Image (cartoon, rainbow, N blue to C red; front, side, top):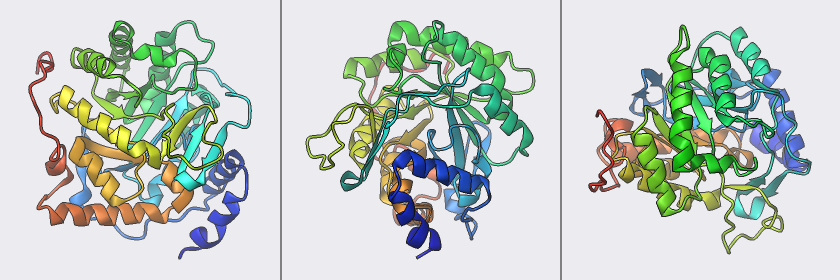
Length: 362
């Protein structure tokens, strides 16, 4: 067992969760970080959006909100890192306490409210780092903004030059009215504005992804699929945290308002991932996130239709060694089933049926 797992992780768990997270960020920024000791298994390498991923397992947004430690997390062995969510202006977020451990459920509830230091701070950090590894930037709107599209377009203009991909986050449950932007009447207009802002960048053309909620109704899923297939969006991230509370949650803090992440989110987010893969006819790259805590979980997301996967919550319980176990087990599962690459396995457990939503121009 590593020193981190044996000593540091138990100490962090004795602290309030947001305080523990802040100390973790400080330690990683100071260079206290475990490093991935061996190269990734070649079977895990994949290529998407003209980016080479050494493995398909990424760090989800929310861990490194202010772009303080992307390189430390890449040294952990992540195949890619997503910073943010970042809003145009600095934002303190919701009142504390706003982050809760549900240890009995291997879950977290957060109602952080896009707390971050703003675009200019993140851009200054990214401008100082050498361009290495695959880095995504998750973009949000300020809570009091009257023009959501302008906020997202500002994010594109400021962080686009430093990112390998950009994410339109319209699915956090902790900013009032944000999820309304997933409505068909709003979504197409927003995506078009963000794509135009991306296309105006002088020296960069990062792909643009949309991160959606796991709480969409069937009609809302179809509306989102129709909007994205009619747009120039480059991919979907499925899915954000949920406001649902499964009846079998055991932890005392389960009734707290906010977004639930971790193990209870695995089944509904994977089901939605499969639905979106079918609704988009497998024509749009998907990133699967929500409840991944093992190689088998990651493999299930890939077989449901994910080209890449992301995790966060499980790290708070299992520590950095989890990442190595996921990658090792995932490689073994691919070989067991006769796949030579991640790309071959994408959607292999998901039967496509005609949807009438074939992408325009495809």
